[in-house]
Image (cartoon, rainbow, N blue to C red):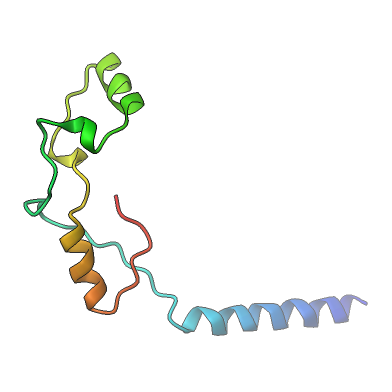
Length: 89
């Protein structure tokens, strides 16, 4: 019984390794600016929720350029290269 369990575990590991080698690489891409953004720091309510703004006000945190969303044009350009974008932040 232990031998059967070992073989099953070994096969599961080997099949997992095969799946990892097939298009499972992930990369973190840092962008240098947000110049192409359609949003403005003067109107943070357009890209931050009311709750987020209240929380920032309570903690005395000001909205800055790091709070701006990643421009859609940047995401589109990255996708054109064939990269599957999983997450933006």
